[in-house]
Length: 225
Picture 1 (cartoon, one colour):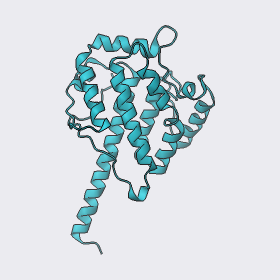
Picture 2: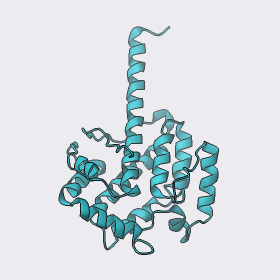
Picture 3: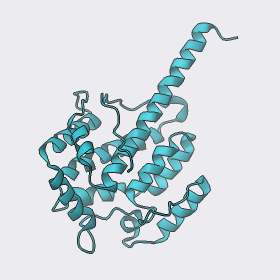
Picture 4: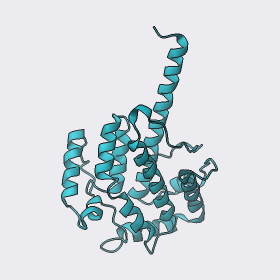
């Protein structure tokens, strides 16, 4: 029989684990939102008010850089940059789709494989969504939901559909001629995905959070209108 102290300790551990998973989901969603569309005025203002622990860990540096980028760019500047980077005339400077980064072409086998895996996991494409499922935002949104599933499921999806091309995407974005505000977003994505890769490589029996960065603001979620 477990003592009250043991039960309390187990409950505290479970609550901490749930908080960690909730934070992971929130970060995935925040980054996905930044790549899905240019931030709204409300979202950009929220980013300017981030309060982050001051240390030299890559995630802390990335959060602080994103806050400073939000403070130094106007809403119109960010909107124009998003247009040039991801939409353009015919095509933007940066491609947000996994198939292109893996094979050099859109709508290739990686997308077919992804659709099969999404179907097996119970995900359906919304009828109003125009982009293929291998858009970086769609994949990050899926990961935000997979955090509730066993770690091997998360690990398999991440490695197969994100980890194998996200580095190429980040590099292309960092080198784009029009990049300014989104350089900070690219660095945040890179820092966070590096933490996830390390976490997935850890023995699950001894898995611990790699690094916690205290973001005092709650993660921003913009209501759909």
